[in-house]
Image (cartoon, rainbow, N blue to C red; front, side, top):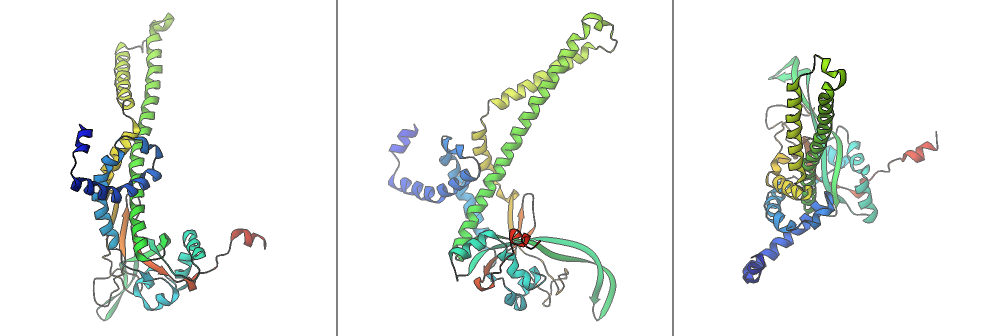
Length: 332
């Protein structure tokens, strides 16, 4: 039937399928490379994943397009840009943030004299502290306040221009979602291993229970025929569950898991506007004209975050030399 349907597709259908393949297949290839290359041998892999990939790509690309920037990240920008000053405690921290990133340094090595663009993400940490606060014209001491700090800067997808970087961020989002699906199947594999261990334990317990009546074992008052029946019932249940699990190939399960994660990616990857309102000391304050609203997006992953994310431009002139540990060891 599928062969006949292929023969009688209209030119418009073929063109539509070709457009969908051009959009989805490169992303499917990225997912396969990031998870399990054996997926390429799964029948109907692309036909199963094209629709969920295209649907997710439209939404994810929209979220990534909403990440502010490019914002220059440099000591000079720290002096004039409230967002950069909110993210970094000192002007010198800006250049160090990208100078220590190996991928960014590799970009500069291949493009001497050119600036680099990439997504800068910093872990957002909130702490409750006791500090003074200005209430009207009065300074009120020992007030519980929330301070926000940003640490462990990371650069993602360094590239030559904004368009290339945002496109690569979309690709990396799909790789991440593919890894989330792989983790789900890995948990199933671990559960199967636990059931195998439980089966072995029940078999050993059952052998002991059945030997209880042999020799002088019949004098053992702890022997209970009901416990043997319970062990047999538990063993039958575990064996049935293992047989059901063994009948399921993990690769098709991974394809299903990928499709499900893509359809529900908001449970794994969130990018939303920043609602923070900060004063000059990075204390959270009510929204007001005097407050700083950092021009960043808030990125949340399934198990990490939040992160403050911004598309950043790293000036080549600000690239710092980072001492190598092996060079430093010569002076010890």
